[in-house]
Each structure stands twice: as structure tokens, then as C-alpha cells.
Figure 1 (cartoon, rainbow, N blue to C red):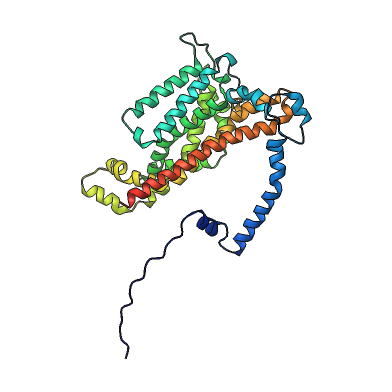
Figure 2: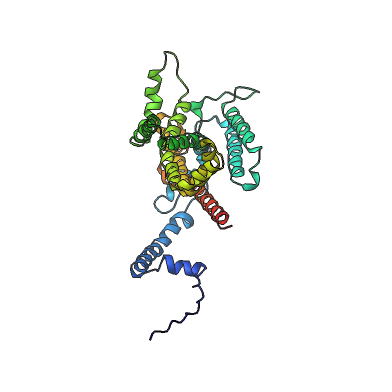
Length: 366
């Protein structure tokens, strides 16, 4: 005769913590994983001495063209960065006025960093954005208060990259939310129109959009009307990014249960109120990694504007070195320099995304 007996509760298994547990789980979590890790580690150790020799020990750090020529093939010439850093960072902007793009970039970066801090989420933040953008374009363009007027064709380098990426994201995000809501609309005309826009834009490369914005768009305007090329490129990037962001936002909207909408309607909230107060906060929070991935892509894709003769960070490097036969052979060192800039910015954006995810997870567990 079977006798029922309660089994005593067991303690929950402990999850190993620390870097040793992470190494064991991520790098040695199976024989194939461990073999791959050991092979890559062996390759890295074999290449490390030569890389360190070229990067550090045999490298030339001073802007001495003769010393760099003597070290070619054995050591890097980091002196090219010291010699050409102004052209790389600021492009064709007048050298005597380089303090203006430097100050404009610092103001924009400071505001972006402040916008990511919770303690700065105050009412003054929105007017601060308007003020900083006004100061940015005033400093870059000049033409008043004794500042030399500089046309947008001469803007370049890091300030142009930061401006295009930041402003494109700010313009694309509201449009992306509207497109995502439109694709889920009950009105067939709005739903089809938004779907056609998204699929059409996502079906062409960004280069073609930039070409259309720069060369074809003016043909449809009245004679004598030619918008600034920087404005056309900015709108092209923003419209292109909005299509990709819209699909990410739509995925977040689909993750919100219908019961949330019904609950919002039961307490008297209208459609726009329920979307703004209930649905969108949950939807955007669910797709933070996807949104940040799109933001990083926008920042890196800004390098494509060189095809329309706007020299951002990558284009400024080619402009600084391609026309100088003395420093032209050291293009690799220049690309390493701008790669480091791109890496720092993209890594900072990725780390901030992870911080937002942790804050959201902590809020959900309360």
C-alpha cells in the first residue's frame, strides 16, 4: 500500500557569481566552446608581441616625417595624428576659427550626457536643448557679433558627425512612433500608407536616399529654390532612420498585452492618453536594446555623407592625408585614430543602454 509522504523543501540552487563563474560559463561552457577559446587565445598570444612592437615599442610619436619614414614597416607613425589632428577633427573649417566647432561640440556632448542622467530630468532640459542647438548653429555658421561666416559646405569632422547623428535621432524618433502607431491603426488607409513608406524606405540603401536628397530633390522644387545640402542630407538620414526605428517600436507595441489597453479604457482614458501613458512606456522599455542598436547604426552611417561632398570624421581623414604626399602613407594610423573615437562613442551608448535595462528591471521587481 502506497503511503503519501511530503518531501521537505530544498534550498534554491545558488547562481555562481564573479568573473571566474563568468569565464567558466561563457568561455568554457562545453568542449567546443573551450577549444575555440583556447585556439583564439593561442592566436592572440602569438600575435601580441608583433602588435605591441608595431603599436608601442617601435612607434614614432612625434610629428617627424623622416623618423616615420625610417620606421615604416616596423613601427606605427602616431606623429601623423599630432600633425593632422586639426584637419581630421574639424575638416575644412577655417583653422583660425577652430575654437568655435570645439566649443559647439563640447556643448552638444555635455547636453547629451546630462540628458542621460536621471538627476537632470527636469523641466529645464527641453529648453536647454533648444538653447544648445541655437548656440551650436550660431557658433558653426557665424556671420554675427564679429564671427566669420562659414558656409555649411566647409563644416566637417567630429562636429558634423555629432550634429548629424544627434539631430537625425531627435527627428526620426517621433516620426517612427507615429509610423508604428499608424501600422497598427484600424483605418486601412493610414495602415497601408505607413506600411508602404516603411517597406519602400527599408528596401533601398542609405546611399541612394542621400543621392536623391542631394541631387534629385532640388529638381522637384521651383526654379531658383535650392535648400542647403546639409539640410537635405539631414532630412534624408532622419527619414531613412525613422523607417527602421518604426519597426522596432512596432515590435514593442505588439509585446504589450491587449489587457493593458482595456484597463486604460476602463478608467476613462482616451486612445491617445492610453497610448501615451500606458502603452508606449511599456513598448519602448521592451525594445531598448533594439532602439540603441539603431541609434548606433545612425551614428556610424553618417560616414556615408562623403559621397555628397560633406566631409564628416571619416571624410576629413581622407581630406587631411590624401592630398599630402608626405603623410599619405600613414593612412592606417589615421583610421586607427577615428576607429578609437567611434568605439568610445558606440561603447558609451551601449553601456548606457545596459544601464537603462537594469533600471527598468529594478522598477519591475518593486
